[in-house]
Image (cartoon, rainbow, N blue to C red; front, side, top):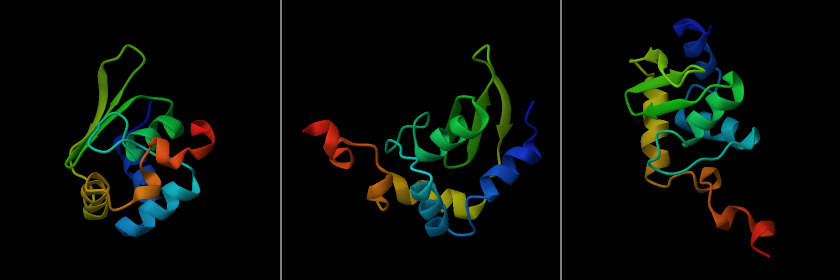
Length: 108
């Protein structure tokens, strides 16, 4: 089972600024949906890294276990992660937005 410290370390590894987080997620080809707590880039990153569903909002992250119940919650997010989430939800990182525009081969 993942500890809060391991979750925090995983999130901290994304970068020290919102822009570094965006760059690292882009390099990992992780995208997400705006204002969707269970499919934003951070939730998708955590799903990829931990194999668990995640709920992400501006002040907490919840990871779900195999029985679909919350078994780990982080209530204090770093400022850089909070700003990244706010910036993403306002469209600041268009390359991270999972949309048909970002998948041209699928639209042809």
